[in-house]
Length: 344
Image (tube, rainbow, N blue to C red; front, side):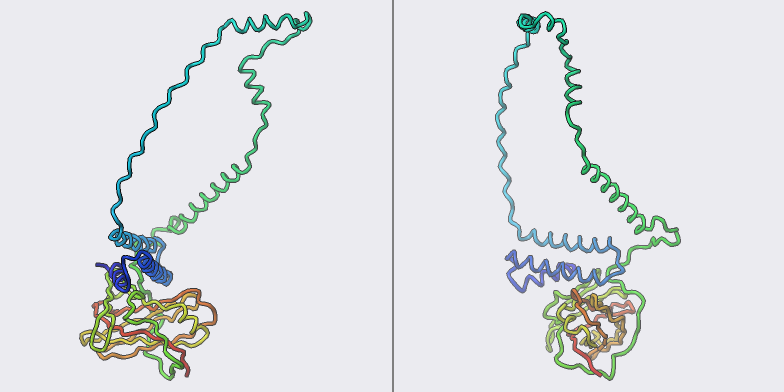
């Protein structure tokens, strides 16, 4: 069972999975979490994002088929009986025309008979009718044609530029697309901040009791565990894949315009130290760069601070954690993530 299906089914256990409205709520939450993850990955190609969306949609469709009853075969539609063809009209006698002309001749004066014009042929009548009809102007059809051609050439030019058609072979990137949530060069590295302290109450950003706010892409894993002290979530991944934790929009609105302090309550698993990296994306409020920590077997808080500008974030954000940047897939236990306003 992959991480997407596992998260959806764990969310089902919190309510009545037979209720269609409840299932749709879970699906919407899954899509929202995916969109927040994709928005944080500005360097990811649109094709890769589309594949992620289609993969989630296919998984939801597969799960939803378990709740769909079998459909009954539709009854065949009776065919209407053919109507009898109307009886053909009798052909017009060739003598009809001379007879009519003879009947009209007594009513014409001698001069009228001499000057009476000949009867026009069917071809001439059709030509006169076409000439008499007003010619229809079709400006809207021409505008539609021009707009279609402009759009076609515009899309072609956009595709040529974005696909690297005009780049040289050295400039064109022919490598395999990077996996989702691949982290780039570090902005900075350091230890936990000192000299600051939180003011007011801590705001819960993540709790293991709600694993639906965690995304584990690719071959990464995020499993909820129970121990004597309470619940935790155990994460592991490759060196270039991050586990993403959602940050609610309300949390960012509370911290906007202030110096925010974040605390990650974590420990290394199985008594081995692991080196982790933490980065974040807070929508229009920016990010926090990247920080590295050496996490030991003892549970501890790992802090980082960031100055957030004034304004409306417009959406939620994300905190991305790589549990082992050395690529040994060492596991990391997360007990919670909190945030508060910091003062010096």
